[in-house]
Image (cartoon, rainbow, N blue to C red; front, side):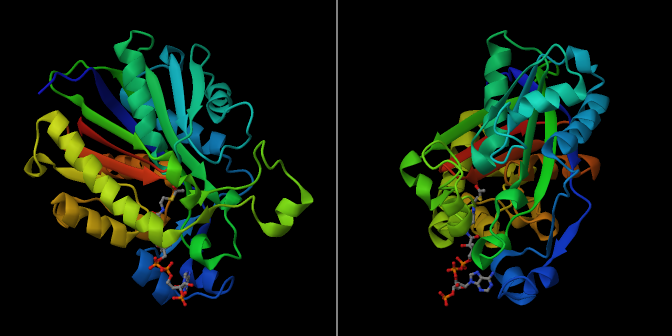
Length: 329
Ligand code: ACO
């Protein structure tokens, strides 16, 4: 096994106050609590108010990370923000976070890889540290998909929630603890299985866009489901092989929380018992790039992850993108 180049230190999360339950959704679209629970495992999700911007939620999550890591904000030299639903398109979400934190010595930029954004961010952070470009990198995954969700489309609006999670990446100091392997993949030919047709430079904002809802997320759910299971299982295999480990070595599997049935199929395909798998989709729905770092923070604070635990994190999202990262905490 290779010696890790970087380690993860500290964790943090922030979710909005407002809870949107399945019963609430029953009053908005033609659906039922039973259907949503049976088909997705979701009971409720959090929806950000106007004041709960991504920048504010991320500031809260990063403050917890800095406290955990005992790092001063001025020691942060890079901020990487994985998101597909930034507060504004320009400047980037990471720039707004840098200003909010007062991280005056940090370079800041976004990574757009939808639900895989956090693991892609970790991969970039590892590269920056390996190259000697950065020493203390805040990696954030956050989305406010409620702002780009069509609440007249029952096939998507039941799925998504808002939130942010974060960690710190720095040069490994603790022997064999840190990132043991990273695997990232993309298939851009399948981009239109999960996309936002309008709002970019090809179809800039227009009256027509408001009328046809092309500003919102669209998803071919059944197709995405199949790709998600296959790709995440494959990513787990690659990450384990690269780390020189087997499924028996995994203490905690943290999968992207898109659908409970996807998670159950993944554990079967990957050969990792469900008991080792962390699941919180019932409480938050799919929070996109935030789902893995929120789960990571909950595992750490609940004592499910301890120093030395082997954690396999695996993501899948629009792009299509997918990724797996093996970490010894
Ligand atoms: N309530 C009741 N019925 C519904 C609802 C609903 N909310 N939504 C769809 N249905 C109906 C459909 O209209 C369809 O009816 P029909 O048979 O009469 O045509 C039926 O239920 C079955 O629809 P499917 O789309 O086949 O349902 P499925 O079991 O596939 O579940 C779901 C849909 C939950 C979207 C699932 O496909 C899924 O989770 N897909 C993957 C999502 C994902 O992984 N996303 C990746 C990341 S997201 C990101 O990157 C931002």
